[in-house]
Picture 1 (tube, rainbow, N blue to C red):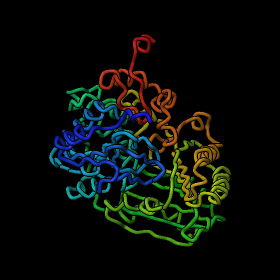
Picture 2: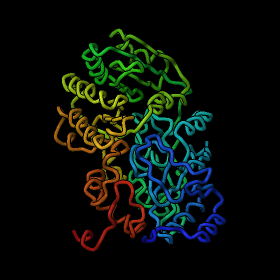
Picture 3: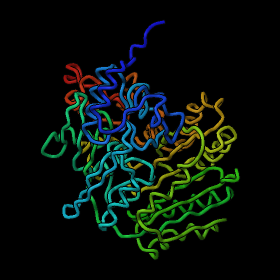
Length: 472
C-alpha cells in the first residue's frame, strides 16, 4: 500500500499545536467540526485550525505549505460551494469575532469571522450602521471581500466599496496592512477580489448614520395571485426609493403547498414604509405581517431559510426583464423541481443598485456594476440519490429564470456571492475572467505580487500574471 503523501508526522503536528493560541483538531478530536449550512459542501479536512489571533493564521499557512496540504478558509460556513472546504488544512474563522467601533472616525474594526448580525448589534449602539447583508449567518470577511449587497446598498453602495483597510496574511505567513497608503494595489484587489490574495483576519469598514428601526413586511399569497404580485412589484419599481428593498420568493410552504411570498424592508419610519409597501397588502394576501422592528433584527428576517434541512446548491441568475410570463414559467419549473427536491426555492432580490452602478468599474476589483436584478436559484434536497442531478437541475432553473432577459444577463454567472456552482471550477480561469471582467488583467498583476505560487486557489482563482499576459 502506498503511503499518503499528505500524512502528517506526529511530532510536526505537536510542535504546530504549541505555536498556536487557538485550537488545532484532527478527525476524532472532540472539537473537530466540519459543519456548514450545506452539508454537501464539506470535505474531510485532515486538520482544522481555529485561530484566536492573526499570528495563528500565519502559523497555519506556513504549516500547511511545509506539509504539502491544500488550504481553505471557512468564515460563517453559509455557502453551498466547496470553496470554503478542503481535504487538507481548513482555517476556521468562527472564533475571530471581535468588533471595535471608532465612533469619532465612523469606522469599525471587525475580525473576519464576525457574523453580519453581530456587526449590526455592535454598530447600532452608536447610532451607526455598516453595509451588511440580508442574512444573519454570513461572516463579514467573505461578504465584504467579494462584493456585498443588502438593505443599505441603495444608500451607501457595496460593502466592498466601503472597505477602508484590511489585515492580510500572505502565503509566506507575512502579515501586512492594505489601505490607501500601504499596499493600495492590494486594497483595490480586496474590494471584490475575495480570497485570492491571502487570508484576511480583520476588515476596517466605513460606518454611516443609521436610524434605530425599520419597517418590515412579509405577505403570503396563493399561486393564482402571482400575476397581481408581479404587477405590484413592477409598479413599485417605478417609484421605489434607495432605502427600500423587496424580495419575491417562490417555494412550498411549511405544509408543502405552493406559495408566493413578498418580503421587504424600508429603512424608514412606519408611515414611510406603509406608503411604499401598502400596495402589496391591497392584493389581499392570505397572511400579512407588517411591523416596525429594531434595525439589527433586519438581518434575522431570512433565518427560516438558514434552517432548511438537507443538501443545498445555489446559483444566481441575472435578469434585466421582469415580466409575469417569465416568472410564471419559473414558478412552473420550480413546482416540477420540488417533486424531487422539496425545499427548493427561487428568490428575486430587488435592491436599489444605482449607487453600485455609479462607481466606475476600474475603481475596485468588483466586476459586476450592471444594474441587473439577481435571482437566487436554490436546489435543496434530502434524497441522496438526487445529488448527482442537483447541478444540472440548478442550471436548468437558472436558464428558465433569465429566459426573457438580454443575452448579457443570460450569459452572466449571476451575482458573485450566489455563483456557488462556478466558484470552484478552477481547472482554467474561464469563470474567474467572467466574474471579474475587464478588471481581470489588473487582478493578475496583484496576484503575481502577493500570491505568485497560487496558494489561494479555492474561489474564482485568479492566475498570476506571466510575461505573456503582461505583454498582451
